[in-house]
Length: 218
Ligand SMILES: Nc1ncnc2c1ncn2[C@@H]1O[C@H](COP(=O)(O)OP(=O)(O)OP(=O)(O)O)[C@@H](O)[C@H]1O
Image (tube, rainbow, N blue to C red; front, side, top):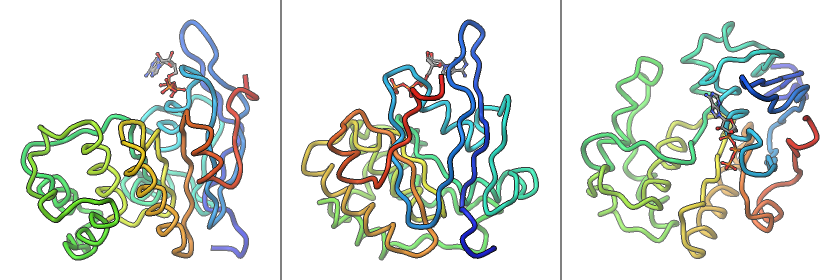
């Protein structure tokens, strides 16, 4: 990677729905250490932008590069292992939380990696949960518990760019503060950046160092 090269470079992204244009000409960069707040009213297309950045929603116009290379140059699994989205509504698979966390290591792209129960226990403690959390049934988790699981599932894979879609929307105030603290710790590691949406403007002020207002790209 070139010195000072952005981690993620987004150029001129536009998204048109059948009946209306959501946003156009969205350009921004995330460099290592950045935590940027993606703000706009409900329905403005914040989630769709994150889905665009991870190619879960096809890019209609514009381009995105991670460390200078496009997703197709990386190959989609490699790209998504570096640029990872944690969706607003977590998907829990059958089995326990631990099953949900370990399952991703079956993917080819993570074949060199192993589930690390020690780091998981440390993170759970930081979130006010005991190790028993790992034994809960994924399908029976509350909305907040599912958000915690989804966040941990992503963090354990050490992505370089984390896209967090309202990561604390279902959490109580105390756990929200703990998630924010965990995120700050996570960002201390060199070479990482984060884009975060939230309707809580105080949270955006607390956690992010600048804002990207999608409303300016209509
Ligand atoms: N795959 C899709 N195809 C067509 N329209 C979609 C698709 N996904 C979302 N939309 C529409 O695009 C608009 C933006 O949705 P999106 O979820 O990105 O908004 P948002 O800014 O994240 O909203 P919120 O803050 O409420 O979560 C909505 O009107 C939604 O119905």
